[in-house]
Image (tube, rainbow, N blue to C red):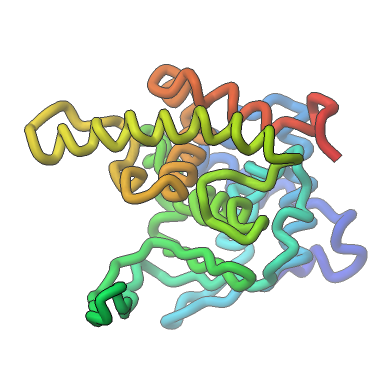
Length: 257
């Protein structure tokens, strides 16, 4: 795997045939304008050189698998830079969803344990886990704004300041207050939509209802849609689109370091 990257990895692009194969899978990648497409390919190569992929449950990591994941993972940091992913190296890929056992002790000392089905998971300071089935289906699921790779890598961005709170690291407290003023309001609105749909038979929201679990999950779910189906996302969340633009494109606008 990665034979083309064995020497001077950061400067060696993904082979043309392989790159075109990956682009054909994902229309939201093919739709990037020329300068962003070139940047995506460059960062994908750098990402592949910096990370280690591991197959679980017998899953085999091929070049195509790795490039599919890397190309989607670098979308959120296209202008921020790969330093935002420097807290981990490993990416573990399962063939399908994973059942994880959870144990939590509540404030009263009662122990709760359950099984949780996961299509992905990002660990603070640790690796990222992904279901290949969900990764491979990202071209089709973009219509619903769903993308497991972007979801988990947004969690990585969110956790960089030590808290998964629905706000990425920002320059100061004033910027955080402005961010939360929009994010909390949109989260509350979305959560109400989900509750009305689930409890009272109201219309189901377009965005994945999992985003109603907590504000950090809402941030990750909203970013999935922002990157893979911008037009529909902007129509449903007109207040969030410019907020995300201001953060994810900050270097392009001359505001980032």
